[in-house]
Length: 160
Image (cartoon, rainbow, N blue to C red; front, top):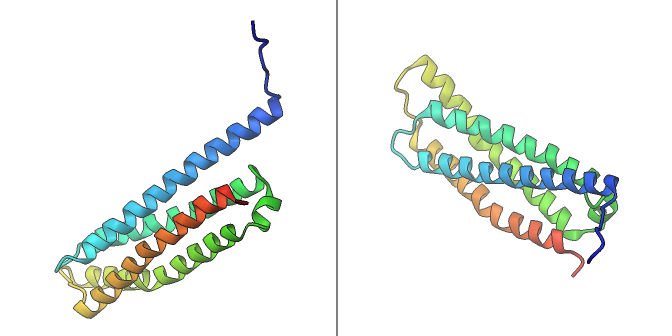
């Protein structure tokens, strides 16, 4: 008969904490992807529902902030700062996430402007040039998620 193996309580708690944060981190990223894809789909329509776009964009911003907070929790727990500090894929992931955040400023400002215009004049339709610019920015954000997710996978497995 095999002897029962017991995991030290502190290790088990840390592992469970890291697992919960990892699951939350992944779910938040999934939500972020869904919101961006929904924004892109709405921006492709002739008369996008500005109120819905504003809600999605606000949700996107909150989700991005939560991703950062949960990510900090994962860095401080889990493998610890020493692992991440020396990991080039971590820094590539952070830089890509920051770039996506910077790109998101333009569509966010446009959507806020449209929302204000719609409140002043119900039935307002954003100019086509502004819709095109916002659509391109959101499309680029989605495109940059590909290397971001690749960097995340490489980061978790580093060093090779």
